[in-house]
Length: 277
Image (cartoon, rainbow, N blue to C red; front, side, top):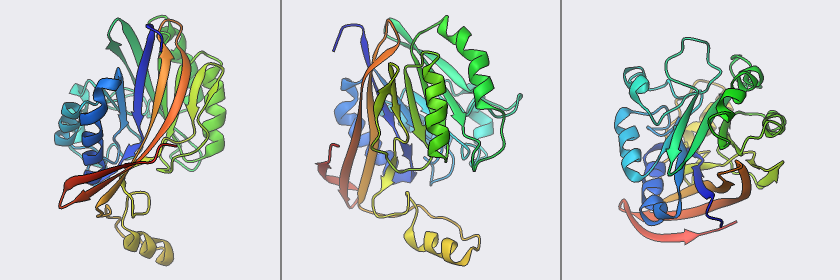
């Protein structure tokens, strides 16, 4: 890896305490390998939203930037601290006047990195156009730094791929899809931009994308508004991607998926079984 390169770790959506524990344990062993750590935190606190306490705990664990999505508002205390949370961004295409910001620029050694967050609109809320917002802001951002990372929190794979190719034509460094909680096997470099349709999730292995099977089954078979509950399990799945960027030119040189299982017993880690893919 060249001297001008920066190595970024991006964790897929973290779901509940078991996901937070997996990330904390992973970073305790591996934080020194990375220059910058990003985490999608919209489901971090019992599966819905992000408490101020968990935000601070994950910073202490080594997270440098928090992206989010449509569930970021689920814990109402977010409105009390989002304006002061200088490592947290919410989707940029919420209406003008929404609390928080849609992108931030971070110092990473002698370089700068911009992280942008958008929500998809297919099968999602009818928010402002991510296409227009991106195009309206990208020129000014590129005058500050060539290193630009996008978290696109969206349902539809076609929308993710299409928006990614659009962003790559403007010189974005990395484009990571989130929201579906299922890691895809399509990591690649598109026009010097690292890309994956979905980074996956960090949470209970024996679950339905982090939630209890029984409540998920009841909701899907009865069509009644059964409350989702975070799954309880002694095995965590940890999904992430490693991205290497030439920080001078803002071009990605590599992207690699991380898929690990962390086994716990009585809330203590007893085995780390790596399944690199």
